[in-house]
Length: 301
Image 1 (cartoon, rainbow, N blue to C red):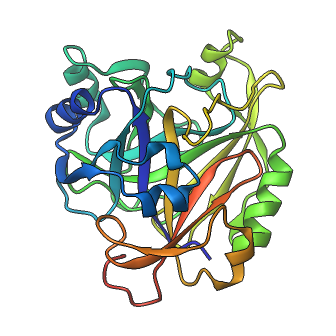
Image 2: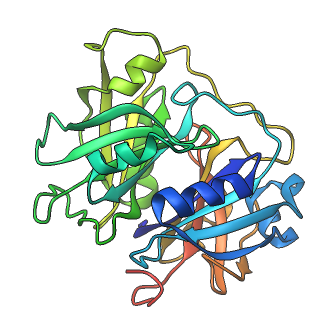
């Protein structure tokens, strides 16, 4: 069972520009920087990234949920137009104030702050970062989460949801339930304004949406995209631009060893801290980095 989201890896052309924007606008702190080691890129199945510069950043709250930013020359991919990981959702205290701050920043709001139809106490907005990467910024008042997701304890806090674009939502839910023993919701039709906007559709257009529930504090949102959505372009030995990889904690890699893109290995540095790591592909090509974190591991909450 996946127990937590540990990190989201973003592939961008200018790591320094992204770092400045995240530090200034999100209050994130750089906790590690360096160049990708051969062991890491081999585990990812992305040997072409060996030696590329990277940083790891964490929120002002100190929560151990990281954004990792990797330099690559991959062409930017348009938000919400390709299959796989598409958006990183982060808890915040005040989306309205954050939206005002973004007016003079590298971030561009594409979905203004608004209450959710299904839970009006929750307010969310959507914005593109400096490399075109898509974020949802969401306020959940204490005690108002229907899935025990928690609330922000700093102005911009941790990742708590990752958004996956797929063609076959039922197949995806069966994969996550059957492979990891996770509970899933039945698909339902939902208005997703930024998705309709990306495809030039009416704001009244609905899309199948479902939730994959981790034990607590984290979710995977699964959105079924139009049939025209395609896999993102990826050069040999690289990863797709933008939101490329999501890292999850898992009690043991042993049941999944035959399904990994490369043999698991122990990796150092954040977010690994000497734990064993392997990478799987999901049914829409999404890369999942699985970090072995036995129950009681103090590095995960």
